[in-house]
Image (cartoon, rainbow, N blue to C red):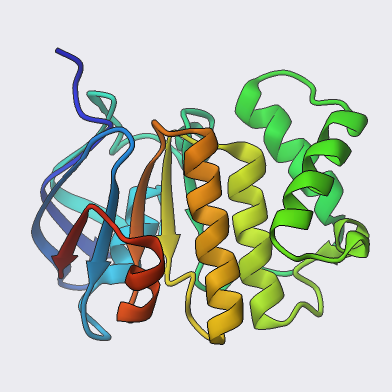
Length: 222
């Protein structure tokens, strides 16, 4: 019997210096499942998201993290990404001088361990930008530079669509979105999972409204 897609077992996490922020978190995500994590500010939701992706800001002091049965607590973030993990950030960083198109080509090449051609990335971006109601000029803008909140979140979902990871962590992707933008983002997540039905999703949110659009399989309170 194959192991679960992702397992969090008795996880204890602290900031680089300070007391534990997460205490004994347990969660099992199987292929194709969407799990939502809710909780008040300060409960550790974003700490959980960035810890799973290997942020050096946090230290795992106990428990286990497994991807396809492999212990990953000691893996660097880039190793986790190449293995099929993806994190959509709550506050995406601006990168001046790097276009969305070039960023996604580099990310897709790293993910697949082979060079992705410029034409392949262009065709894929055109398709998904249409689905996400994004203007065609978007692909040549610098990554997140001058983007509105809604554009940044659409860009995160565009990355999800192009990379099609094994396991996606969406950290408050609905934050700051109006209802129309929220529906576009939720539609994007659903469409990516339709194309890759084995993809697991961990959705971190404050708001019930996103759950109404995406309809997760399980909801957890942190």
